[in-house]
Image 1: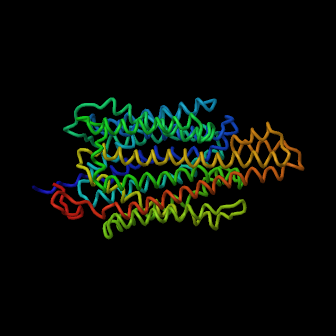
Image 2 (image 1 turned 180 degrees about the vertical axis):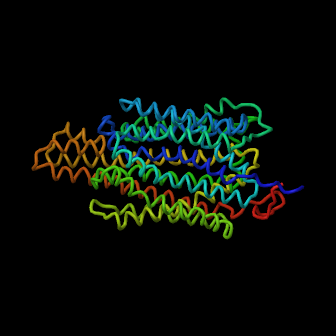
Image 3 (image 1 turned 90 degrees about the vertical axis):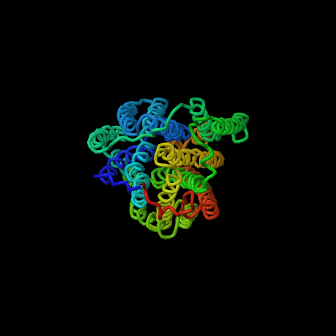
Length: 517
């Protein structure tokens, strides 16, 4: 059969898709730099701040399998356009919130819109780039844009907070939505699965229930206690829901997620690698932006600019990662990238009150960003290469779900670890300094709340108490960084052992030798 002709203007189409994915991925991190401001203006506790971050990613992650299926069935461009319109409207609504609960609800609504956008971009990309080598390059660019958002979010958020109130971090979205919609209308063309039929409603409910229960349990564990009945019940319920979901999907004739895909080691090992990378990264970003502002005393803009190494290194190395993957295979590049990330988090665990940014901190972030670039692009290519093009929506949904679930759990777990270390240390230390029990209890809520308590203390106590608050937060940051390092290291070993270097077709030909027909 003749080779399929390349689609004209496909690289301009990629630019539109990258703008759309940048819009939703920036919102994963743009709010982080506003957390101290939100803590003051809305009186949000650490748990409330986690929910402001995780309400978006929780809903986003929970719906990705469903929205990926909807894109395959009804058309990916249509799904993308509906998602963009909804994203603009919900962003405006979030900017009007007057308390923590309203903002959490607004962020959750934005997550619904993001779930419609994200898998559609990668599904369209897979069908636009029909040549395997061009597709790998395009996926590398797409993954690089996702990585860039890790730093673009805090930087843009910092710029906005220097001149406007926190609502501006959401109001920046509608104008970008208009540009993406207009460009997509003229350039993009729709695609869908011609064989799609049926709908797995119970599977959709099960995927949402499992993810929501797990993340809620992790976020609330420090408040209830890790061994409390509520926490134990949450973990047991999560396990039951997961088993039920997998069992149902394995037996359903038209499953939301074909769980047999995970028998393919390229698919399953690559999914695990992405989950681990974003677990560690998003959890660390949640902590380090608060470190810059609360511990170092930097403003929002300076704190955002401090994360620029993520953008610069990720952007520079993402294309390099794809070139190395084509030459060396997926295994070496992905495992090596995760090992770099582990080293970066290990270095971050040595951070102290007196650490210099232009020393161990920036070195740690460069290692993390380099590892992210090396691991995520090749892993994404492995996931999509294991599926036929007509299932691009499902494949992209799995890839996107691993990113979002990993990131959501990273914020939940590392945020909870930090909260546990911070809360116990700051309370005991303040009591030891003679601070009253009620004030010490108030300081447990968050590092911003702790510094607020300190500001009202007598001068003779305020200095040591402020040091105690900051040191307690650093103790939590160190513990969280160690956990992130361990997760990335375990993922690197797993990738080295389980992830095949190249995809092979039914007769054993490597993917780079295949001709798209």
